[in-house]
Amino acid sequence: MNKIVVITGTSSGIGKALKQRYQSDGDTVVEINKEGEFDNVTKFYADLSSEDLINIAFENIAKVYDRIDVLVNCAGYAVFGATELVDTKKARNMFEVDYFAVVNCTKCALKLMKRGGKIFNISSACALFPVPFRGHYSAVKAGVLMLSYSLRMELTSSGIDVVCICPGDVKTNFSKNRDKTLTTNERYKDKIEKSSEQIEKREKKRMDVNYAVNKIYKVFKKKKHKPMYIIGSSMKLLYFVSKLVPFRLILYFTNKIM
Image (cartoon, rainbow, N blue to C red; front, side, top):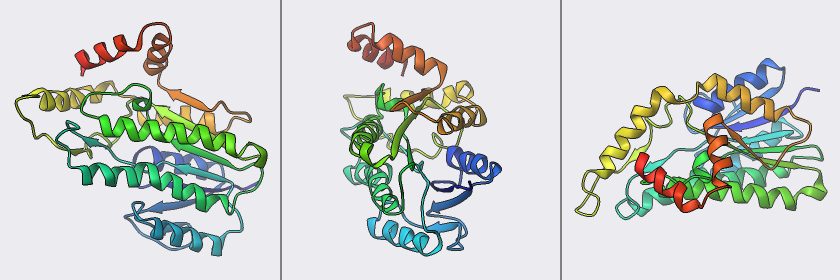
């Protein structure tokens, strides 16, 4: 049966590729974005930092569709810089988009979701392995992971599945579009800029977006789901190793590398 799939952040990257995969399978994809063209049929506007605008978007969706079968919370961006020096307003806005939008979209979608519904939250490997100068981003993605676990338990009796996806580095414009604060002081000296350069140097080593999305989509199509999936063999290996050695060693080597 044709599914009604709501996806946030389909203008580029993983969200765009997931939209295309669902459409190729004959499902109806309902997109929620801040930028682009909107028709209030399959493309709806919402600034995801605004709960009111999210509510309006889903009210308009409800006028067109009598149900939502799948919700994919994919939209997000990263704030980069020393936690001490990043403007708290920037961090707070990232939390609005990356965390509270997940909460608010989920609350709205559940009103139209019946038994058998699925909620997929796109988090990050940073939820499992924090990285220096990405403290806020690591925190927000860990929050999405813990939220997903809690929702999964809360919705068990409703027959609605909640799954969190934690991809490693993927070749998209995500890193390029980071909100970077390269401001430094005597405490950090050139470490912030070098860390940013290190992230950019790793671009060629990132997973191809189509490869990553194929892996993610295979997870989506499973009949039974685990609570969390890691995408990327290197991240899976690191997660396995992290269970065998003291976590302080993981932090030590991550800090050295990054």
